[in-house]
Amino acid sequence: MSNIGLEHYLILSAILFAIGLYGALAKRNAVVILMCIEIMLNAVNIALVAFSRFVVPTLLTGQVFVLFVMAVAAAEAAVGLAIIIAIYRNRETIESTDINLMKW
Amino acid sequence: MGLDIAFWLLAVVGVLAALAVVLLRNVFRAVLSLIFCFLTIAGIYITLSADFLAAVQVLIYVGGISVLIIMAVMMTKEMPQGSPSNRLRLPAFILALVFFGILVFTVVNTPWSISASPPLAPTTATLADKLLGEGGFLLPMEIAAALLLAAILGAIVLVREK
Image 1 (cartoon, rainbow over the protein chains, first blue to last red):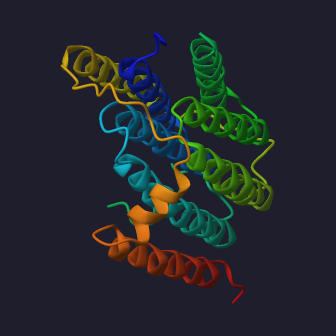
Image 2 (cartoon, each protein chain N blue to C red; image 1 turned 180 degrees about the vertical axis):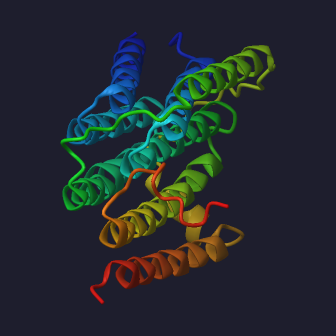
C-alpha cells in the first residue's frame, strides 16, 4: 500500500495555487498574469481529481468537473489573449499598470 | 513504492517549474517552464489513475493553450523588458503565504472520509457515461460547447484587423 494519501495531493495543490496567486497579483506583464491564472486552475484540477480518487473512487464526478474546468480554461485563455493582443495594438503596451483607461 | 517515488518526483519538479514561471525574467523561458509544469501535472493525474484526464491535459494544455500563449508572447514583443514585478510584490507575497497557511491548516485538520475501494482502471467509458448517459451531465456539456463557440467567435472578433 502506498504512503501517498489525499493530504499530499491537496498540499501540492495548495502550493501550486499559492504560487499562481502570488504571480497573478505581483506581475506586470498581462501574459504572465494569464499564465499564473492557468497554474491556479491546474492546482484546483489536481484537488478535484484527488478528491475523486480518494473519497468517491468509483463515481468519477470530480473528473467530470475537471473536464468542465478545462473547457472554461481554454475559453478563458483564448478570449484573454485576444483581449491582450487587441490592447497591444491600440496602446502598444501590455503592462497591467499602464492599462488604466477605466481607472477613476 | 513506485507510486511514491513517481509522486515525489513529479511534485517537486512541478513546483519548481511553477516557481520558475513566477521568478524567471524572460517571458519566453517562463512559457517553456509553464509547459513543463503542465506535463508534470499530467503525470500527477496518472498517479491518481485518471488516465483519460492525463491525455486530455497533454492535448489541451501542452498542445493547445501553450501554443496560444507562445503566440501571444511573440505578438506582443515584450521579451526584452522581461516580466518585472509591480510595487505590490511584498503584499502579494504575504497574501499568498497567508492563504497557503490557511489551506494547509484546513487540509491537515479536516477528517476526510477516505474510501478504501480501488479506483476504476480505465476511466474513459465511465466518464462518457457520466457526460452523455442518463442522469449525467448532458446539459452542462451542451452549455460548455456553446461557451467554447462563443469564446472562439469572441477571440476572432477581438483580434481581427479593422
